[in-house]
Image (cartoon, rainbow, N blue to C red; front, side):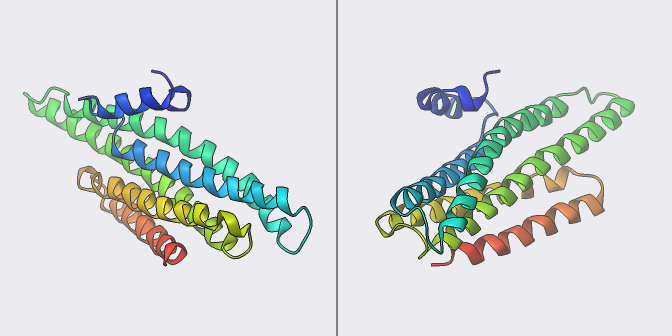
Length: 200
């Protein structure tokens, strides 16, 4: 399967539009998060190009580096999300005629659901970091790029909440109640930080 990072925009949209289970919402959330990171990275770069020294240049340089890393990580997570959902679908298609087959199938679904929740939770956390970076740059970067920073914050909010939805949808399929609780509390903590960073 071709990596999402190496697809053209047209190919990517065709794959999202196709009547196939993956890539789906989780991959799309990661991609929108990567777009937000790219915008924050752009604002940092423009700010440094305009003013090379000053009280905010250290922040801008650090943000430039961290957003490049976040962008790359989210592209990887988009691929991982598609693969995790494929694995979940394959688990649901296992035989279930005999009791031992149902037991094997149930275990496979639970394991696949954990992975399918784990990936968007990491996406959510990376996206939250993107939103926090955008928030920190507000008022400390190029004024003419302020609208780009605001777009990044809005994208990050939408992407993060969408990733959280993909965590939640997998929880009922996870057998271990402690693991379910861990995923739910992890998502809730990240959402609280995300909302704080993206408040108008």
